[in-house]
Image (cartoon, one colour):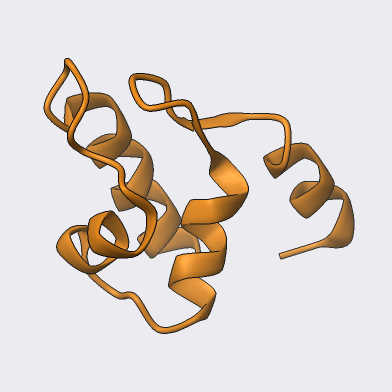
Length: 66
């Protein structure tokens, strides 16, 4: 991931419901989390009002990209 993308990821939401930034999801993947469940454990996503529907899509896209 390019440095500019990481800077933007610090501002973008990763999990809207829980207020978790996108950079936390990216860092979890870079640290070895390779499934939604592992990323959820590492970051706290998925427990909000949408029950992971929004962040689940985001995680799937990140796993394909990274």
